[in-house]
Image 1 (spheres, rainbow, N blue to C red):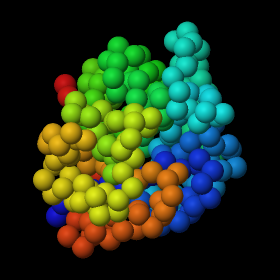
Image 2: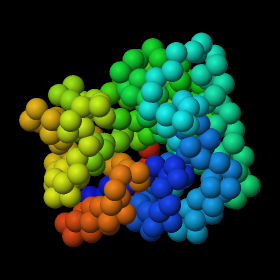
Image 3: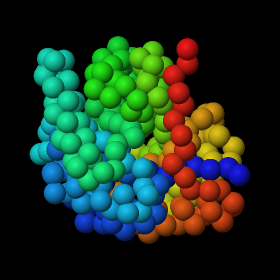
Image 4: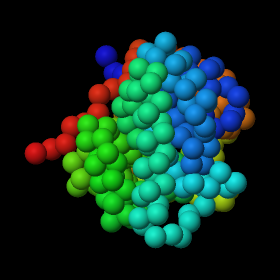
Length: 253
């Protein structure tokens, strides 16, 4: 049977984390950088444990005023320190709750920058691996994130986005550009089905791209997010596709 993972970014103040946790199989939890605080992290992890949802950390630039969506210029050691602080926080709470973290997914501008810049991504992923050698990274498929994960030798989960437009080179269309976020429910569902069944994505210019992604991100901070997530899951299961947190790809020798 074909299976696909559905993941959502949680702990970002949307007010419907619990609803999404009834639908998704993986939860990427904001850990104090762009959003998130200890009580919220603890609550989400407890719900993940109760519902058998895979949990991951979702660190980003420590810039809550701009929600981590702007690239900050700073010394690399300062940025790596910010990432470590966020991971220490969420890992401590995960250990306390008894629901360990399985992966790290970068947020916003930090995710986009690592998707574009290989050397930068290697530095970030090497820091994550040094903290938790067995923890996977949830990475945008066909981006420099995947190449960096392979270079560092960290377990890998390849990801695609349900509601974000792609450029022809496999990167996300900037949010400042018209059409960057897909609001048409039928279009989102069609994209998810095509990815799950045929391993294909269609870029904003019509280019058809092969994708090995087996995890689909459903954004929690867009209008109607819960209803959209339910419709996506129902459509996938209606085609006989199981929703499951698939095991990461292990590093190649």
